[in-house]
Length: 247
Image (cartoon, rainbow, N blue to C red; front, side, top):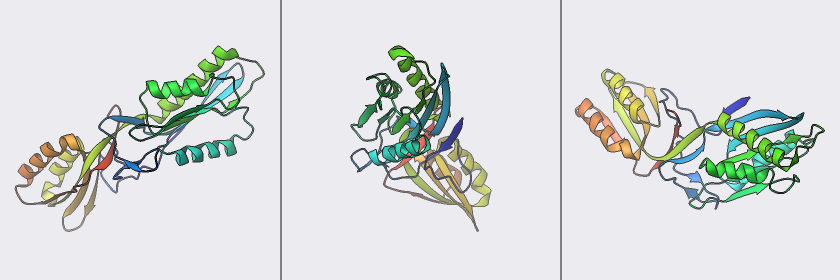
């Protein structure tokens, strides 16, 4: 099984329990940029799994994809890698206020592959998510019901391996604090931030992406801790933060 993050830049230091995308917004299906509402569910990373039924190999792939272009890049790579696959059905749900979605059976009997995968994405409440399952025929027909179960299961395994996350609106807070305050400030940020970074010079410079719902309480705690001895700036425009499920 392979797994890796998709385009999420890592911090310079001090990653919190969550992971922020750091973008002002994420692309939508319409090609514009879209700031997700709190709690939008997506994939945390990407994954490849293999599922075998009656000697037929079903290779499940899942990755984050918010635009048609990202989906087409994903499918083009799979078609290059699995040029000899019998079929490569796929399904996706893009980003945006009204997410575009599509299922394609790629030559399998109608409704036996792409549609079950799309229904799975919808049942899981995912957006900005694409799944595809290249199949290598093993010599024995599985029947319509067998195909539905096999494709859905391979897709589910891939999605679970990629992991889930919530995209949430955040505010970016910049801080400059004395080294004496760094430990306590770091502890506060770990409890509230999607992601933060720290740089060390004469004083410690920190940047944190904090869910909007937690900003007021965090600022109050920081001001009480610092007692006017540090610098605090809040970016007025929201950014997109990412909180892995289970954190």
